[in-house]
Image (cartoon, rainbow, N blue to C red; front, side, top):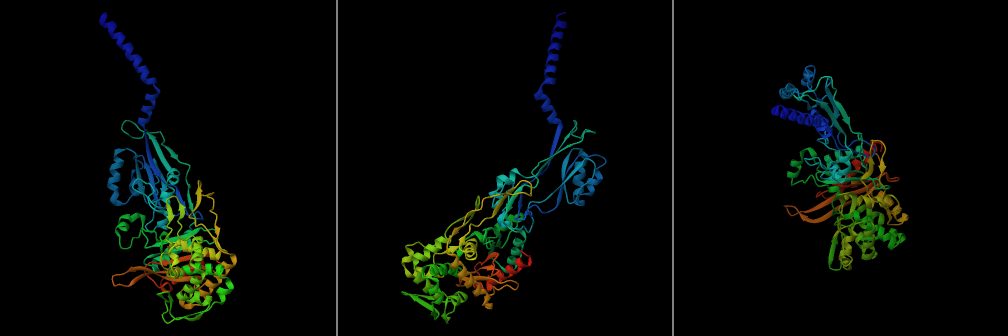
Length: 530
């Protein structure tokens, strides 16, 4: 009786415990989650678009599938993969357990859920220096990928497929898997870049420049329509790019400061026109004998024989150093430096979080007490450096009537790939009179249109601009000084739509290295109908 009574009490306690287990919400949820198996098929970042909503990333075509093996889908799955992968895929199919599969074409079979996807980058990735790249965990490291990492990570497309499995981890017949897809398809960041112009610039620069940069700017809005650095690199081959110490392809040369040389004569002319007066500057004549002496220092012209008598139009066309040195000395170091600062030289340009165009250098006011320092500044030498973006900004002020625009790279964001949440446009500043800008535009148009030897004249459009061959103070192994070749210009001359700046790093002789690149870019953009 005692044993029977104890047995009954134990059974009663066991029944109570079993009831508690079967009615526990937590345990029921745990059991359910153990039976539901989820495959994450896609986990993509948000898109990066050009100004016309054309994708700049994720353009390739591939397919990712959630495969739930059944006797009826094995052959279709095997047919979709290359022969060298079939043995491995066949082993996965034999287990009967769900798995994900990447293929080059869609898989159409029962219990196979296929979705189109794309690699983030292409081998010849458009705008690689601007877009940047990701680390192994999918986080942005440089460029827009880093600047907009939080948004791009939060708004990518995600696809999950969940199915209820039996104790053997196989799909229970008759229970259809559940597909869950995020609603952020199409979300992304919209750039000011025009994809077609960017690709045009990259093609031309890749053929004509060993090292350097090309920047295309809308002179009225400040939007960067293209910015390319050479040599280029591919985000798919980062190790090779990092190892190439000689060419440093990962450096974005469009955002780095260089000696600017005669492109700065635009600022010198602007300062003189507004300090000395346009009537004086336009009628001022000077005989270039190939050099000019400033105190005990002699400054040579690039034409050692001299240009002879020149007015301002001739001085700009011939890029005569002594003429501009004399003009700069008459203008005065204080007025010249003031105009330099007004044009934004020495000022960093912030394009996005973590994307900054370096400010370069300008001489201190105390340095310009020395007339030789004023002479150097007058034709863009001495303690003066600027980026291609800054030079484009300077040239834009000539085109748009004297406003120093703020260059921009990001238009805004989109949640659907159609409508754009536009960022506020930075306000520009007036840096010279409209009459001064108009006069400079005429001078620069004359310099290109009247000089076939400059190499800058496009075949299909008119243009204006300024060449430069900038001394660097650096020398090669043979003892020859390295010089930067520049051309900064605009087109068409009479109604400019774009400013284009070309830097030929360490190549010198802007007429033969940078100017022809400008002409090719202008013709290329015109051919696009832009």
